[in-house]
Length: 264
Length: 171
Image (cartoon, rainbow over all chains, first blue to last red; front, side, top):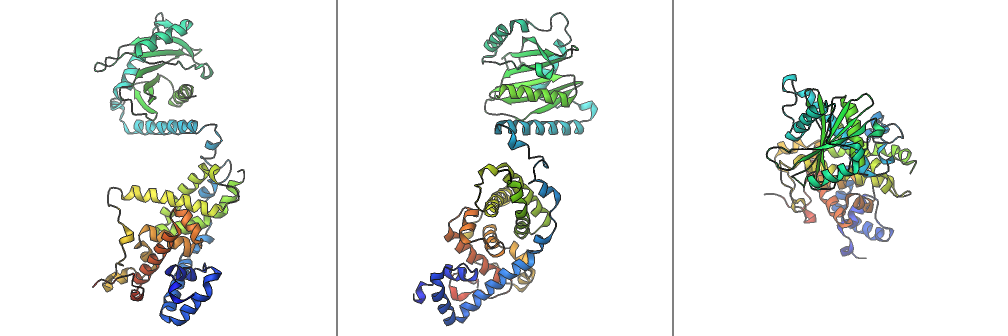
């Protein structure tokens, strides 16, 4: 091997002790003949050493507990996610938590007088429909849960897409039935309202509409209209809003169940 | 898979050392480590048992870092073609004084040169491990490594290596 075979890569490898055995003799011979080059490489080796001197201290420091916890079973917030059957499910959880946090922060930001004024039209519409129909004793719905198949077929036809009705019995809410409502003034499309109630007669309403903007899917969002909490989101071209006069965490739990049923 | 965490914990000090040299800031470094660990945990099923966990986690850290840097500078700057960036920013004595300190000098390296240099010189990864972690060919590792070393040397007050013919001095 003559001097021309020595590449800069060989010289770098010499610095790092990564030179293959086969190239070692020739490189060393080259460096004996070129003291200037040998000095340059020695300088690089001093750099290596100064880097280790400067940063090795980090190796001896106690690792902060929150970092170690990230890698220990049962100790961390992100431990449980991968145990869930589907990634989608994990994503849903994340959205719900995110939505909850955002909602919570919005609530904190709004002064009592302004509460709800900033809620988008859809959430507001859902809350109003809730207020109007949920106190109804004799005619809370147009079609009762006893005719569920008919209810779904009818509303699906009017909304223009196949709807599914989440079952919330596990959450303690039985389907009462549903009705058709006018959409917002600028959107002619009607919306569907499903009503549920628990053993004490406390009611929740779920409003579904074909969403005009088909491209977006949103996180769970929360709006408060007076005493009515509304979780709303867009998923697979449908907008949903779940309204109720109950604790936000409870409403969130149910919104979670609704989402999960619609996205099995 | 059960013992992923057990195997990963001893890697954390290495990640912290690298992150600190990479960012030059303790808090930023630990944030980077935390983000890396979270990502690693979520992706742990992708790690092949028996392969080098340390190199795998450096790969994740690199990706997290690149995304963070990209997000941070997205509005402020346009990316430079640093391969064409052969000329060290040397010159005035004042400038040299500013970078007399190694850490400050590291900040003056382009990210991609700093990453290569630190993985090889500080973390003592093999060239092919470093190439794997950064997702670049070994040849690119070698050229960046050379540029990083030369640049660092000049920043720290050494004369540019005219003999190599690669670095040019500004007149």
